[in-house]
Amino acid sequence: MTDTLTPPAYCSLDREAYTVRLAQIIGLMLKFEGKVENTSSGAVLRFRRGEGLKAALEDLIEAEGRCCSSLAFSLKESGAEYALHVVLPEGASPDARTSGCC
Image (cartoon, rainbow, N blue to C red):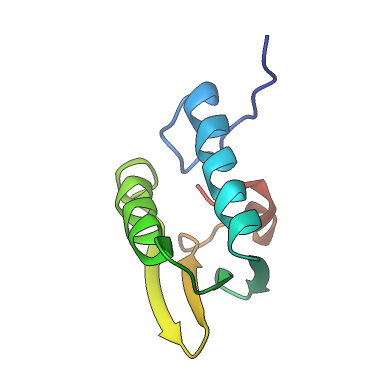
């Protein structure tokens, strides 16, 4: 049996789907040398540009919008990287940043 993680309160995914989503995000982080930067309003995930990354991030934003509608996402290109900005819901604990991107 596979271990699963508990999604944060603002996420509508069940434990299994949440665990799969985090694995997808981790896969992108590993493949495209991703880094996480915590901000006062959420987090920024920075990725080295590469083939297929922009489409994968756009798909991720669409999927996240369905399960975490209280989060705000934006994708920015700058030089050799893409930056995925994630803004937590108003009043969310800063600890919510460490509970996953979803």
